[in-house]
Length: 168
Image (tube, rainbow, N blue to C red; front, side, top):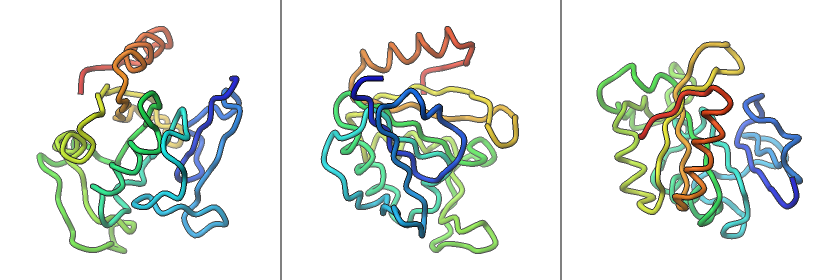
């Protein structure tokens, strides 16, 4: 646990907080609200950054992806998930936050990884199929990291834990 720091956007049960020496939560509209497109934290300040079902709520997801990469630094890991990733062939942009879509700016399709490559090209990707802590159903998520060795170790740990992973 020594020195491991995490930042989670949105307070949910997706992470075992006890494995981190410092665990910070940013809740939209809360005391510790951080703008995902302009995160007020130093470069490389976290071992793990969790963005579980929040990217679709950000107007400029390109800025948000660059910010996530910046605060995770060269060896930090980003856990990224979005709802309904395989529901459409290509991302649908709404052009605004739609109240009838839970405040989403878009519905992501599998081309999300192309966006990651375009806006955060230093990040390698590992897809995984975890169990959603809220629904108990299989979900799609991606681990992102600039350091290939860190991502390889994560893949081994996921395999040991019985979590399916794949190249994303």
